[in-house]
Image (cartoon, rainbow, N blue to C red):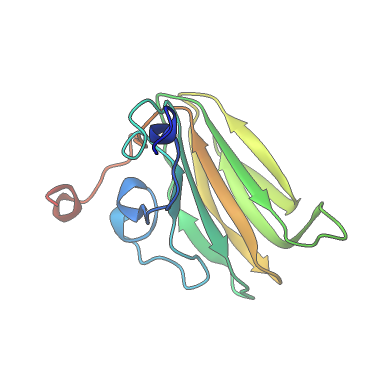
Length: 158
């Protein structure tokens, strides 16, 4: 028997790299080898009523500096989150990552998040080093991900 609210659940997350136009192949870059497939936790493509787009990826170890996401901005707010996997120290990210906001470089070494207001230019985003896998979540306060980034014509034609 189906419940009244079954349509609000995502029970099987779908790979969503085509949604994320500033990352990897969609931005004309190969996905870094230490970045796992992105999966949709919530988006309007899966839950019609959703006013958020939330995707996550596992980030694996690397001792090389890695560029991941190109600079861009959105016409909606966004929250980026990174969470270490050390249950004995929830603040221990096990990585050193960088994120630019309006050209100002921020280096992150602890579990945390950042609120990016609509219209704020942000990224590049990448990894200086990763000694232990961690999860990365992007929460867009919009049902579908979009940005001002120029998408290569061969990608836009898909």
